[in-house]
Amino acid sequence: MKSKAYIGIRKWLLNPVTFFFRIHGHDQENEPREEDGPYIICSNHISNADPIFLCAVTSEQQPHFMAKKELFKVPILNKIVKALGAYPVDRKGADVGAIRKTIKMLGEGKCIGIFPQGHRFKGVYPRDTEVKSGLGMIAVKAEANILPCYIKMKKRKWALFRRVDVYIGKPIKFEELKYDPEASGEYLRISNYVFDRICTIGDSVDAENGKQ
Image 1: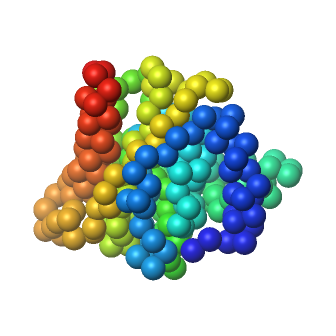
Image 2: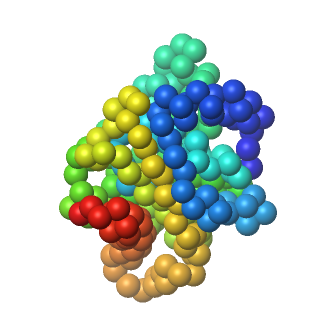
């Protein structure tokens, strides 16, 4: 489900964005088609530009990402951010309203982007970071499928003109998460399960390239 504004902006900006950011997509055949229904796209989180990288390599659906509410108060930028499908979140605390909106959007057939780590980790091996339970909660409440992706760049730090590779993994069906409503800590377990899949993609890529 893509808005006309998003389709137009993506059409005009895709080539210059992929050129200047040197974005390379891999295994794009794994991306679910629109008829497959909505899903949550997840990846490791390195830079503020990560949503751009994910949007550049996916084309079947429009990922909607949370963005800090301050951006929606900036003239002109406000309109651009909204056109791209972003929606505000208060990052100072647990924004229940934003979480409810996310679940509602998934129910309406929209694709949502979530970073399991919760915030950026520059220059850090992903498996050495902790994840948040938010992804698990949203996936359960919306009974959503998940698309794991891995963002790779030199030294795990972004820089203009530094190559960015985005690997798209096999979709994770909601049933595969095996949610047990009677067990404790299920939201965090599910978040960790998804993030392990993301890191496994990265480990496989590093092994193929002879890197640790």
